[in-house]
Image (cartoon, rainbow, N blue to C red):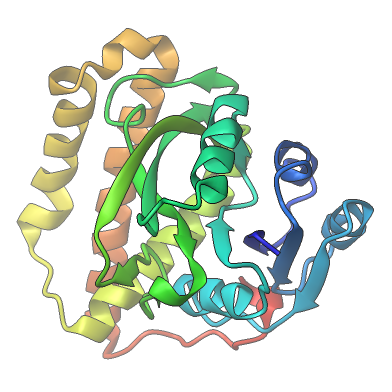
Length: 262
């Protein structure tokens, strides 16, 4: 078995079929670790022959590692439920995996964001590289509950062909994730003892908007570019304000590990 696709899911019925369609002729197996979906996620996964496991939510890093541990392939393609593999990328992955002389083992791949149905090419959303393809024995994700990273001692190589990252389908979808991500981000900072001040809450969000919309040319993406720059700056503000609340209250309310609270 050469290629295992490893994924984590939670209520992904709106986008999962598109993702699985994009990898079904590439993967030797599809392994999904779900954290208690209540929609049609499991049904859709099994239509594609995926190995489907249910595990309580442990955070993004640990959850990804669980999926990888359950894979049997030599190569792991670790993707999110909202990441579609382009035809050009599939051909590139086959070329790498089938090349017996290849000594490269870890690759980061560009993610081209699709927000509200539009490909975003500016504002920092058109060039976002992340490690997605690697040999199983080369490393693992850290324990961060959000903004996890793959840690390896191997040299990391770059693949320019794109993953289409369907970040947000609708504004409603955006704010559902917004609340979860800002809370998880604030918890991570709290655990690490990161301090918060006026600059973080009031000035940093303004700088983030200017950087994305003006300096990184987000205005060229039209109204979607403006909305994403605005909500991204709001994300920064809310994350730090939640951190301030945690310090003010002396702690944060720990959610149950039960996945239904994700």
